[in-house]
Amino acid sequence: MAALTLAKDKIRILLLEGLHANAEHFFRSQGYTNIVSIDHAFDGEELREAISVAHVIGIRSRTKLTAEVLAAAPKLIAIGCFCIGTNQVDTNAAKRLGIPVFNAPFSNTRSVAELVVAEAVMLLRGISEKNILAHQGVWKKSAAGAREVRGKTLGIVGHGHIGSQVSILAQGMGMQVIYYDTRDTLPLGNARACGSLHELLAQSDVVTLHVPAASSTSNLIAEEEIAAMKPGSYLINAARGNVVAIEALTAALDSGHIAGAAVDVFPTEPASNKDEFESSLRRFNSVILTPHIGGSTVEAQENIATEVAEKLVRYSDNGSTAGAVNFVDISLPAHDGKNRFLHIHHNQPGVMEGIMSVFSTRSMNVSAQYLQTDSDVGYLICDIEGDIDSAILTELRAIEGTIRARRLA
Image (cartoon, rainbow, N blue to C red; front, side):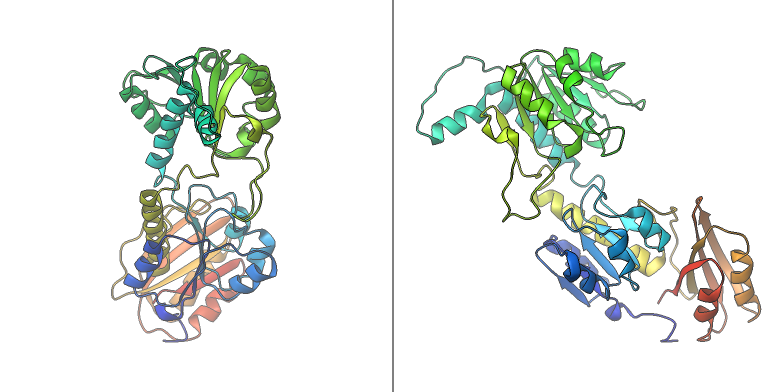
């Protein structure tokens, strides 16, 4: 029996980039003890060597899991991105290798929303410049250009989980909220949907961006869009670095068309805290620059650590892929008293027949079966009753089209 399963204390878990302690605590509470926690990212040969023996890896945004890196990880069964985005992982390559990727798309929603509303207040009050001058010994006490947020129009581009939270908070402070989304979403409170991006830009005193990274959102706010904004308005980007054309924003700040901005994400970001941050926006006192910390609060990191660790444990223990960004979604009941086999394969004819043959030739009863497929991959879970022999996994893995197979402990 031991040859068919991997005990929890033998499953190697590698946690990089200083993940919150809740992640390791949760793994240990579930019986996983073979854990290595590192406070920084790995890359190059160091990453390939570390991942070559890992069964589960947890990362944030700095560790890049490319197809080449994943090819060096023959034991890897799951990836946890302890953040919202998964752009740092080649998710298609992971799927082809039978490795689901999990993230925490909602755990830092409140943290980002609070920062955005706070930045709207600071921009309208000119706090960034006043703060810089005060540090330089300049006492610039003046109401000139300082405005309340009450009654101002906030334009939200992307009315998803974060955008809708921003809407609620902003309305609570008396702002008029309009939003634009490519999907139909319900307005909250007195918020009003706009028919186009340019309609929103022309009406907003402050524009805030909450869209995902995609080809359709690359340079979403460029020269034409910035020109469409109200003169003297403000721009906030806490979404993705490639959403705003920095050169166009720089030019608009130089001309005074845009009065100020708050930017938390950038097209190119330092690889570590030791590297210099370079941006043409650094020279503007009217711009609030933050180092990609929209979701970096203690509360958010606590929630993210627990959420992603729970998803990884459920997959390792139970086979459930609920919440995976690159895999078919299967939520499973417990398999107490049953032998559960997982089989990930290319979606091609003959695989199911081969799997069932392995069990039927042994007169084993399939007490439950779960199958989901997409255009590329099939994921089958079988709960089996009967005596298990050591050749089963060898035969399952030998079936043409198999990507990986394992038996749960």
